[in-house]
Image (cartoon, rainbow, N blue to C red):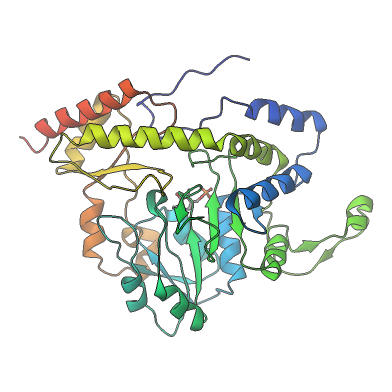
Length: 377
Ligand SMILES: *Cc1c(COP(=O)(O)O)cnc(C)c1O
């Protein structure tokens, strides 16, 4: 086996797949069963054990996880879902997939996450769900608002695509009572190559999710053996996770402790290095609780800084261009001045497990130089 080249600061994000994943995939390929198999079910069980929850339902992607969760929460045509504009477009497309409408809300500019008061102020008679996004891995604590929403029959569906491994009140994200969706896409904290997971709130919801992610088909063990019959019992899509992806996820999960340590160390190295640059404001997180997913700073003259750093081979990014300004979501546009302002300041520095201390120095030096030239003639 040849070792692929180590991606450096020329990539904004990168999976870390050079451990036992290849062996695990090799075993699945040798076995010859690539659909939803016992390997997928083992991955579900190990994720559930890791999080400290009774069950977990694997899906083909994080977007599929969100779509399934919205269906499980009974969100349908015309319902309103309260959601920050500051998220990946996948969050909003999942809402559109059930024909519901996004009710875009502001985020706190220091955390880039929604706050309970903002959410509660946006609740209407048509609100069927609230969809907080755990931006950068930070857990969103709705506090007492959580109970109020529950009493009003409004579901809380967490987009925890960034937050696998993070904690809230000494529990892992996923174990805090919300209907939680993870992504195991190529650049997430834990990757399956492509994949997702829904953490159901009760056994009935788990059964429903298993139906939806498998074309609505329910097969008994005997039917699965014989394949002469199956029953279609409800709506569903081809959303299950293949054993190939699950094998990658299992290998990743088994050395997640190493992932956690590395990502935290890298993040702290960035924080220390950025302290010396007053013009830069780090979107700070408490790494003892948050499993950092992005390293986001707010800078003046962002467009210039972005361009200058790119020119020097530093793969900076922007997470995210606001969704309420996207053409596809125009019908649900509302002015969101805080989000609009902050979206012009944010810059994501390269952040992945292949980075070394010299890479981080190079990124921070380049940022410092770019800031010196930015805003000039
Ligand atoms: C990645 C991501 C998703 C979608 O997950 P996929 O696995 O890419 O479908 C949803 N929301 C957020 C915030 C994400 O970053």
